[in-house]
Length: 440
Ligand code: ADP
View 1 (tube, rainbow, N blue to C red):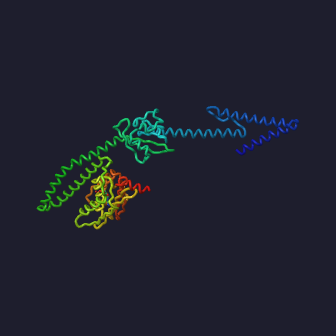
View 2 (tube, rainbow, N blue to C red):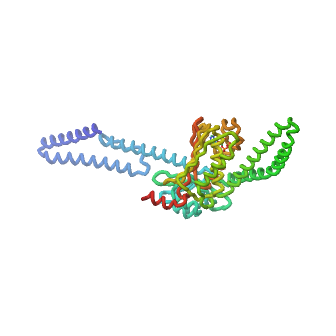
View 3 (cartoon, protein in one colour):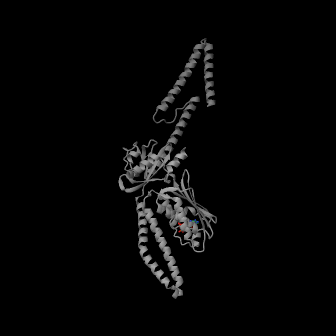
């Protein structure tokens, strides 16, 4: 550019010098200088006209040929135009690609702008959500998806988990709707039809519940006969061991059916629990007492209960008893003779917490995420044959879910385990007072 500019200045200087020389020779230097300048300006105007005509054409083709700085300007503009064109083509191809992939998705996709208006949606959104194109574009999403669960979800803006709603066009179908944010406050809504998954899940629950129920009566009859026959085992020592094993396995199956039925019952209940007041201090003292009483003769554990006063929460007393005693019984089962179990309960600005801490066999940290799965038992616990069903922690998790609580598990092999139940603050009786204190 610098070169072109200097050359242009040279050209002007030569023209003016030539005009001045001709002017001096003819005796009219000023007139010739003016003529030279007029010639230069005319040439400039002509070049401007060429560039104007070229840019004005709808399909600007090759640039006009130009000398000096004008040639450079034509080339630069032409190159910039080409670059812009290829960027635009690339963007159009990307948009087309995304458009085609969203269009072909079987899940509904809706793009919503930061004001909550619909910008775009795919054909699946028309099918599942009943959106109409183009009429519903630029309409607020909450005016079209009016399910109160969705409206709350959208307005609260907590999009970590999906929300489950009935399909607006068919109340029999259930949709899982998940929103994510993108760009400058825009939203991307995904909706998936989960009716079939829910139906299969319900079938599984019904099957487990029916089978458990049907097996209970025959098993009670068999266990009764086994107990009766055991009374005569002394007369026939060869039968003693098989009868003992039969009785033990019958008990295991009874426990299994009991736990399966309990889990099925809990799964059919909604997440709402009764809100009666439960005194955790009393409940934990009772559970510890029962655990001490149920220890195998000759074995001992030190079980201590330490509560920050009479902590009360709103919940279902029987269910809380079942969950917390499961944790204390596990702590006894997976702790060696003479081991120590500390049960603690306290309240702080986050909520109410109950911890069951033991110095037992511990759990491999890799296994911790799977412990609350149904029938999951660690290899070590299988090998020490506790007679467990592998359903206890699944029951604990479900009960805690019904109390909006979470289970935190930390453990180290050979050192012991710590199971902490975290209940939200609003479950604490008198939480209002505590919240006020915290805010002050
Ligand atoms: P189980 O009836 O086998 O005890 P749970 O669901 O109650 O079934 O527990 C699942 C598994 O978690 C157990 O098999 C055991 O491996 C492990 N576990 C639970 N509590 C403890 C504990 N306090 N210490 C060590 N392992 C534990």
